[in-house]
Every structure is written in C-alpha cells, then in structure tokens.
Length: 386
Image 1 (cartoon, rainbow, N blue to C red):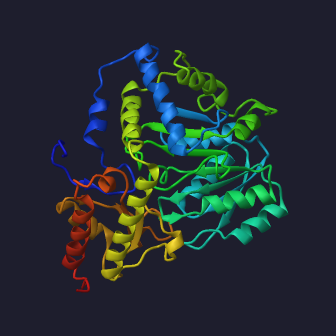
Image 2: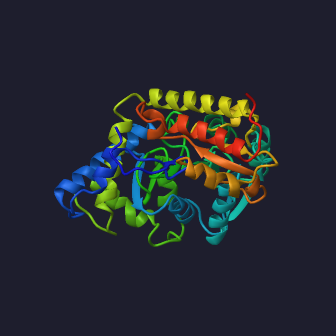
C-alpha cells in the first residue's frame, strides 16, 4: 500500500519512486552524527553495501559520502590517478563525456573510445587500445542514463586483466546498481560508484562507492597528494573504517536522515535473494520493450545485449514531439524524461523502470505508464498499431 499524497508516477531514470518506509526513515528525529545509535546504523549500512556489491573481501572498502553520484567521478580522478596519467574512457553516451571532462579538470589525459549512438565499444577494439598504450585505469558506464545502453562489465574486466593487468577497472554504476547484477569480487572490479536515488531507491544526496584492495594500494602509493580536499580518500578512509567498526569519527558532517533512508532501502533489497531482484527487473524490462515495439516504436539500443534492464530510451515517431507528448503524459499521471544525448536530444524520451515501481507487486506504475504512453501517442495523431 502506498500512503503518500497523490502524485504522478515518477518513471524517469532517477530519481525514482520511493517506498513508504524509506520516506518515513527520512523523517527520523535528529541525532548526533557521532552518537552510538547513529554510528551503529552507519556501520550496518556499510556492511549491507558490501552485500549489495557482492564482495566479501575485507580489503574492499565502501564509502558513503554526502553528494550526488557525480562526486564519485571526483573521487576516482582525485585519488586513483595523478596529473599527466592516461586513462581510457569507454563511451556509450553523455556520461562518458562528463567523466572525461572530470579527468581533464584534474590534469589527467582521458582518451575516449566511442561507439555509435545505441551501441557500445566492442572488446576487440578495446583490446587494441589497451595494447597500444598503458592506461592507469579504464572506465565503463554500466548503464548510460542518456541512451539506455548496457555495457558488459564481466567480459570487459576479464579482458583488461588479461591484456593490461595493472590497469584498474572502474565502473560508473549510477544507473545500474540495484537493477543490474554486479559481482565485485568475482568479476575482479576495482571501483564501483553509484548514487542513492536510482535503483537503490533512496532520496538523492548520497554518493556511494566501493574500492578494491588493489585500488586502495594504488591510492596509498601515490607520489602526490590527492587532487581534492573534500573528495580525498585520505580524509574519508579513517571515517569509513571507524564507522564500520562502530566507532565515532569526524571529517565532515553526514546526513543522519539520508543514512537512515539508505539503511531502510538496503534492508528491503537484501530481504530477498539478489538474483530474484535482478530477475524481476529483467522480466519487467522485456515486457516493457516488447510492448513498446508493439506500438511501432524503436529503442536507441537496438541490440538486445545492449539494452538496460532498469530503463528504456525510446525514439519518437517523426510526427511526435517530446515537448507535446511529455506534458500530456503528465496529465495522465506519468512522468517520463526527455532526451539527454546532445546529438539527438529532441528525438527520443526515456522511461525509467527500476526499484519499487518494479519489485512491489501492489504498485501498478508500469502498467499505468504503458497505457498512458499508448493513449498519449494516439492523441498526437500517431496511429498506434492495434
């Protein structure tokens, strides 16, 4: 049951709809950020993050820091590489451009390996690039929010470890963690960064990261100081270690209310096997994509292996304009997102289907959205196939 004020179903690729209990956690009474009750909650939250990322190695290090997912880029650029280093950024959309810009801000040489819109760089060309030059790290956007393209992280990591074993594997999981499987240890990943407001199902405001022991060694062996003060692992590592050990510590004040909300959301996620959660997202995604195809619409990601399970980027018919369609959908109680990829922004819309809207059988958000889209298209004059 949803005990929230009546509102349109938010079905963009984040923020998403939130569970009642998560929102109630946000109204937790004020606490000291160094008091034993809050420290215990933070400790449990960090432990649950290890479980969500599927890492059991004690040398793996989780971080939860106030900020957006974008802060995760700064952490990587400021701590795992140094000025003048070379990094390889795999490009599947808007967010690879931004990650590369972040690296350049820190004086790091970011080479982008680009694919056509809706596709992803292929393993042979990645292998060729890795053999041509040594890169300190490689970044991959697991799901690019601008295109709905899903990257194959497991195979990529295996390739990197074979061809360039000293290169760190960094995953931007902002739009994937919680809806796409990530096996941090098994796949040999070195960093996964994400945010609270997407498939994890917590209000925006938390940057969530986990680093491997290898990544932490890379940080410890830096020749220079980290390139940031707030985004410095040097400043945050002792805080996270103390919190996880249920000991108070301080560098910058966290948000107790957001941590409580994250604790509640993670508790809900881990109450069932992760395999079930991912399966539900896959099944829902297939149903959505099949229905959209029946409407005569196509996706940016045309290949099934490139299609994310937590969102769908949908090309509009030439006769339909997003500025006309999206307000009409809002009147029907559904919010979709417009296009974000700068080359085709006006030609498509984005449908986010992750988190509670997918896993809670009592909610009818997905059915409502599909019906609203069909009717909205018809009202523009587009003939939806029967």
